[in-house]
Amino acid sequence: MRPGRATATHVLAPHDDGRFREAALLDQYRSRTDGSWRVVVRYSTGAGLTYVRAMPADDCRPLDDTSVPRAGADEPAAARPGVRPDPRMW
Image (cartoon, rainbow, N blue to C red):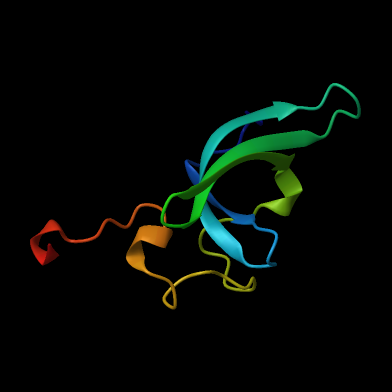
């Protein structure tokens, strides 16, 4: 954890397709090799596809950052973390 900074529980993490996805922040640590901050995040890109990745902390963005391309409304609800389909629809 960075001293003096609030701990986030979710961030926007970049995926291979260039879009950012809402991700659960699982851990943050300093790299032993160069001293940079790194984070471990978990996010979903579709039904049954979940990624757990370590990446440089500077690659992630706060949830309210509107300047980055986001995955979102054009995807099914199951693809967006934290959004659960309404069970009454089944």
